[in-house]
Length: 241
Image (cartoon, rainbow, N blue to C red; front, side, top):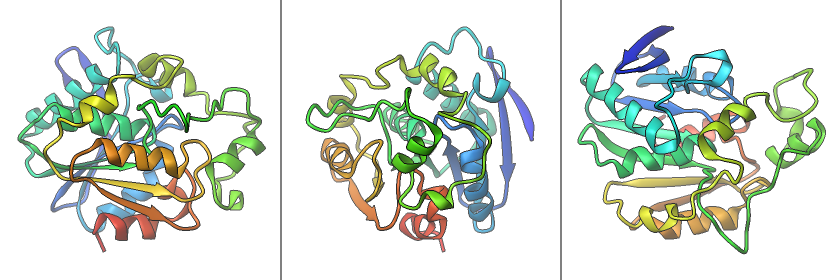
């Protein structure tokens, strides 16, 4: 675990493994939702796993006013680390963040993988509002098999939901994002759990339809968090074995 200073932004970063670099971006549940998958991927590639500033008690610079601002900070981090051929992979909020990084057009980024991402507005298939759900209800919405969820004594959404809304706003969406995704020219793979009840497969199809020449893959027996529920299947879909 290291701490990087990128301009005014302090980034807490795990950097492990060797080879082709992946930047992994966690969702509202915090960095713990991506740590295990990062370990699997690091057996085959170099993996950078930041904790988004403001999550898990980490400091958040005043300049980080939204998702695009955080995306710019991560691109600056890639510049500082002098990395090339980076694949950006994000889940949920991290998927939205991966899309924003891709839209910045950095030559250091060669592709993006959006895993059950949020951020677009799909009128006929809105995101589920998880703010009032009990832990049992949240698990039922997040997993194909809630028994696969990590054990927790919590009784509702992650406390990092507050940090999440600090970037996304209460709607957790950008009405202009779907149109902006049409500007993407780099390879984008959109991967979705067939049993996601937070952002359902139809929402995922709309995400894919907004991205020119995207690839869309549905993972069976998987909910909103493939990296936790079916990590090996996710690795295979990403093309890393």
